[in-house]
Length: 84
Image 1: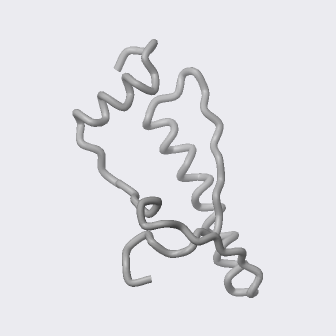
Image 2: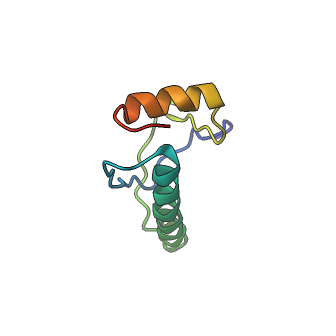
């Protein structure tokens, strides 16, 4: 597609969330899953067996750097019983 992160989805994976997780541990766990999903998707594309799921433009947002204030707010809301 002409936009960034607006193309069809090729894979959707879930990661486990543990009581002691932080944003950093969730990101680290998601990177491992993301790499496997990317490799599987590339193989499926090259073999013509991919399954595409269209997404709407509002679903295609990805942020690589989180502002420290936003990070603190997210951690407090996700993990209110732990200290950050």
